Image 1 (cartoon, one colour):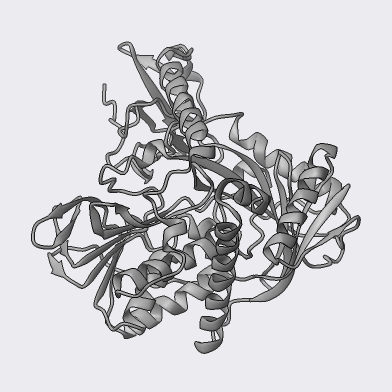
Image 2: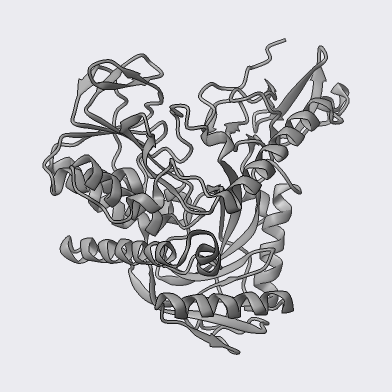
Length: 508
């Protein structure tokens, strides 16, 4: 089986059947309207209905649990790569400790709900390891251990790990966890249905209207009138002049599911340097598989997509002695200026519109604590983490530097895309099904894709968000924007925001 023929579908959807829900086709009124049916939206809805008795509706532009949450690697951990030494330097010891405590509280909440609701979701306790085989990162791991000690985090530096991967030093955090995220969240969805919550799929939110109460406006012109809105759509569909496109950048990562030829010793592993290499186990059809994760890069940038999958496969075969990949998929998340998520009122002037975004690929705990913080704020309860995560913060260091870097990168790709080389239009005649190219039609940069029925789809490659030029992603068969991470199907339909409108189709 060649990798091109492996359907890019996450393992979680292969092992569970999720309920389906209709689109919203009428105006409704609720206490809280939530946009985004991932871990944040569903957990927040559960807390608001179960603990506070509120009437809730969730909208998703796709089907539930098919976005970032559905493509996660599902580690429940406070070990978010190298982060605590950096947080102490930029936020101070107290806030760095708060960040750690927030992750622990999120982990405890997930485990509490699993026990309370008797959810079978393959929860296992695992030690987590950051390791390096690069001398430059040995000192960084040592500094991270000092940060652990300063914050009271239990950890240990090691010169050996249970898994046989070349390394110079590793930092272990004990008693972390992993699970099947969709099995867990499916049960929460079932609890929501019992409580009378409303869920709608294939319902795209495009704006928020403010009268006496805010109203979520859908693409079809329907309204969800509510007292509070939670924007949990990864990239906020509504900005509220919070300038989120300039305060975050999107990154993709890749995942292979492989069958090991030797027994896996347990644990969750990630290296400190680039390119990223991460390993965890998962159960699939009665067998233990390994998830090989890494090759992080900014969305729409870097080398051809299939090269990333090949690099992970080469690593797996060399280090862990695996068979050919059984499944593959990619995932995307956003990173903020200071690496801490934005959670809370979307701006200081919109206190009843809440946002949760920028999880930096650590969405199981960050997404859960976001749900807890926002549900407390909506219910009028004080939450000790709200100041740390508030979206209105701005750290001069590293915020100012990152702000400049992100936006210079956007400008570079916006200009480059307008003038880069394209293929001769005659190249279309030589295309095979599944192939894409970029050419010019009537002088306009145009994306061309041939589907399995030999039908050719032509789209204007100008992103409908802020007019950067999209690039072809051969691994997922999508057009990806290198500026803010919008993704479109080969036919131009929106797959991932912040874009709200499809790419313009070329008919002539």
